[in-house]
Length: 291
Length: 285
Image 1 (cartoon, rainbow over the protein chains, first blue to last red):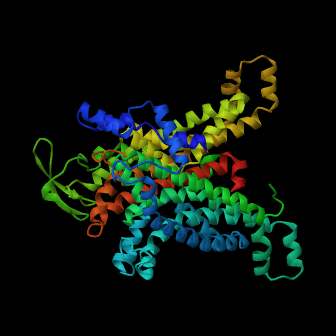
Image 2 (cartoon, rainbow over the protein chains, first blue to last red; image 1 turned 135 degrees about the vertical axis):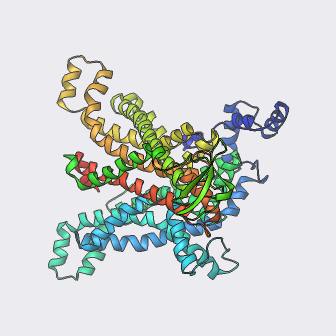
Image 3 (cartoon, one colour; image 1 turned 180 degrees about the vertical axis):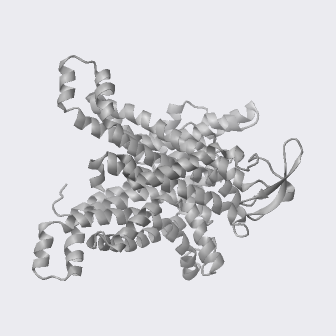
């Protein structure tokens, strides 16, 4: 965790010097922002502040970074949750079914889809969907965001397309792993036993094969969060959603270092936290695992 | 052996075509991709118009893929953009591989370095790749070199881990033991005896990094934090076209199709290579 923090701060002083006009102005801005002190000192101060929950003040928005992140959290959180929900609900059954009928048309279609899903860039897919669903068919709004408190229905309508876009690559990833691990589980002796007992195929698949394939599936959901975070940045830009992803891009364009640091730190912390939760969930998914 | 695999044939074939397109761009009816003409703004694909050269001459030109809001030829920009994308993909993959190989060899062979090096790599891996790339580009303004470095950095830990794992198995082989007992210096063992045996998995990993690098470059440019807008890249063309996407979707679609096809081809090549060169890896997924 310490190294993780060390990697993000970077060297804002040098960049700001390259940006501003005269030497005097630079010196003044630097002193104001505390950038004139040695890097190690800055870094120490920054760490101490972060540990006490203070992410500093945004150069550009002139408010606390922590407040800024809190303001932008809702859209991103909603988008990510809906995406994970869609992805898991679609990919786990699909992956399990294609493992069950290994080599069948569904299996081949799914494998083809997953290679395609990895290759089509998020924003190309986003524009394709906007063009098809919003412009040609006129079913959903093109862009923008409505707060859930303002109008829950409109909120959902605005989020469907971004979540669908974002879930494609996630579905490709999870379905692949689900298929592989269910396939492995189906080859075990207890499956033969279950079938010999005369259990229905559905019961064999859902009660016996899937639970034994759960650990790799949970792992890949966690790893996929990294892809999801990258995707959120792009998707929010395309669909004009005022979330954390947009904030990241805006902050980079404005060279607003405290905000960039804060957002990246926040995203990384979420990523580490989710993977920690998933590690803990192994205990429930597989009683053999003990810490 | 690898050439008999259909994924390798198709993926490789498409890539060779793209490479030829990129190299032959000046002779394929293109104009200078930076030229613009106010009279030919927002033309639809296939429409004819005119374009002014730097000498002030006005040429008749058919805009095969239409033009953007400055009146630049999308077809020319997409073809020249192929050069940038392929170069970024290749350069980022080579860069990540070379750093990753050195770090991985060191971590796998010199035990005292292992702990420290792998913790650093874990730290890098804890931050999602897109964010690292964005942060690096934010620190040193976008240029070709910066973007390549920014894309390569998040990939280094993955290569390091792969090489380290390979080294840990290879170093137990009898031929390494034999080399050690003959008094061969560690450097020679690492590069002369161990490295050659990691080539196949590295080649596979390299193609995947290449595919990811091409995607990431487009993402960065699309977000406006990558290469400067005057360099024609697929991401930049789309970034420029997105503003008026509703009226002129071709600005986004043509570079998007090229991008998707390229990444798909590289991924197919990687899958094919993995199946033929590295049977152990093929079994895993």
